[in-house]
Image (cartoon, rainbow over the protein chains, first blue to last red):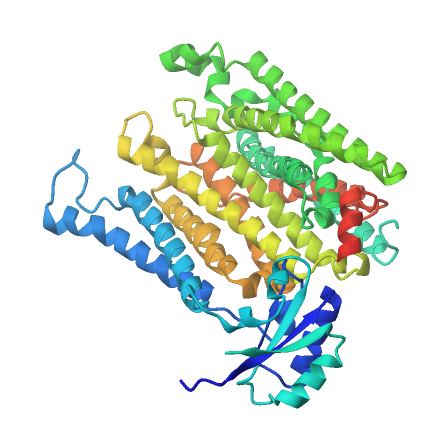
Length: 178
Length: 390
């Protein structure tokens, strides 16, 4: 992957309303590769930056199905083929007694798949990320709201994008090195 | 803001229609039952057990919301309160059963008790006067709870006193404990003792969940129908609908979990005094009813409610909720009726007339409570906060 010397432009806002408005305007202006950083969840922000679908539920479902089938097979195979034992005159395939472990393994695998799937989709752990080069970015955990437009966006132009962001009531717009 | 004018005629019409249908169905049911009083009382008990579940389920969800709060509860609050206020109707409707206990319960029939040592052994608990006394205690407890839940809520509508919210919460904690105990005993008395030799300790829990599920499905359906109205529409966002969907999903899963736990333990134990309950419920036509319950009371709603697409769309969620109400009737049918019809379900006109009859009366009272009250507890301090931030 070719490295762009400029990662993007970071705009700093003082209120959630400014950020929300900026995100909506930027999306309307055609920007797609952007991200927002806030100290707490802001209602409607994800939609504003054009983030609609996540694959985490699908990963969770697949993990659950694997756990479910694996858990059942884990009991079915040894009881019916591997080492069949007559227990209390019950049939070898005593499926009702397999259900609790099948259920637990489905939950376990769904949970693990969700956590690790989420981490993978977020590309975590990431030891280095350019956004931390932005000045005062640590305030994103306290009382400032940031919007970053990535330089790889097709509409990105260092000069025009900077002017556009400044017109949105940004407190400051800064370039981020990659 | 009273229940808005545009809604008033609709609610009033619904109430009147329900009353006419209910009375007509009950009269027909009595007429059909004259030939066989036993058959009539069996159908009547089935209908009573289903419809008493709605006010009780409403009461539990209402107390749950007082305890934990959340936006989801405010649009439901008036519906739940109206649901609980139908309890006195159910208290009147149980009277015919109390007068004819021997027609339903073997332990109430002296000729059967005199030949059965087990019934004699259980006689100190299962006898007519004590049964009636217990039923009166249950109703007194529930009515006391719902009286205060409604009174303080109404008071807050008038005065806006924020302290009432705290008082409601303090009542709801112990209230839920008392609710759990009374519903457990009531389900054992009214339904489990139909087959007096059988017992299961998880039975009360299953009933509670069935009732909460039916009540939640009914109020979800009602709130979706009412949300065409502007004052509610603001609060019924896709996020809140998602919460209703999740609550329905939780109750559906809990129902399956508890029902399966009971089955697994009895199946694994394989004891002579425990398995007849399942044997009679899994043979002949009952097997099909049981299968229907597994598919349409668990698998289908479970898979549908997993999807956010379904939970966030009022119309689809409304259909799922309606389906769950219908399946709750089937669930109660499968729990109750095999005690009488061991070979398989038979179509009895009186069953459906009784369900329709008591249901009509119930809906009539429900609509009457809904009318003339604000649809939202607007002066609850927590709702004010939500309205300001939303």
